Length: 214
Image 1: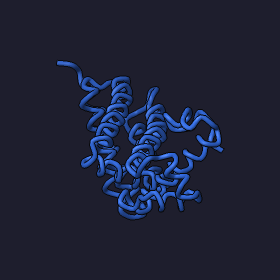
Image 2: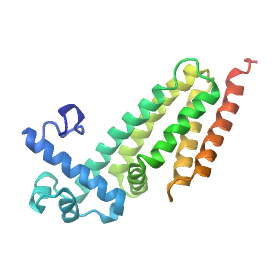
Image 3: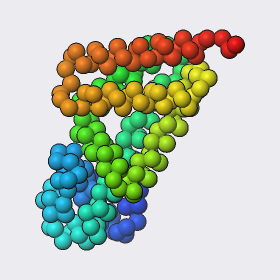
């Protein structure tokens, strides 16, 4: 059962009944599973209805067309993924060493590539589609700006003198590691490579952040 506080933005009040909200959320979740499995090109109202185990008419009742369903699915995905990212960033506070920060971010990347692999596949499907769809482009830009802001605050607390640039650097490296390793199940050597890359990154940043101001 989905709690009201866990529902995607915009679904709590439309449709007004709790049963309707629950059903609409189940359809959105089904769309996300289809996108993660078959890509955005695999989405149709009929396929999503079958995935959600509801009649086709139920899907078309809640969503006027495929594009509206895809947009709702992207919004729901970004809400959940933002919560996961913010939770990971929150663990970077305190008196951590550069190696410890690198280790925690490596844990986050590895978890994404293993426990949450289908969500990452879905995410990159959306980001690719955003290059061709203005609505997804706007939504993805707003989402990435939100992640950037959270990470800027963290690297500022860690001592960065250029938090905006350093946050962009860290996000770019994290995204690159995800893309590089998303094509196949993660092997032990790949896990070690992810850890080594982030350790190297944060060792360099630590030197920069610790350097005296001229």
